[in-house]
Image (cartoon, rainbow, N blue to C red):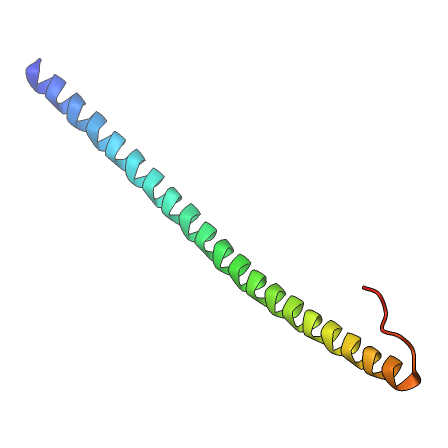
Length: 80
């Protein structure tokens, strides 16, 4: 009886270990997917920040050019 109980306990422990290993693999895959998504999001954020910076620079340059043209034409500077 003790032998049968020990064998049953060992079999159950093996099943639990297999289940835990499978769960660990699933979570590792999930983490890897999330890390890839995070890296993609970070690249997208960096690209968007660069686009915004370039757009602000173009806006500033256009405003400066407009002010120069207004000054040459004798118009007062525009209100912002």
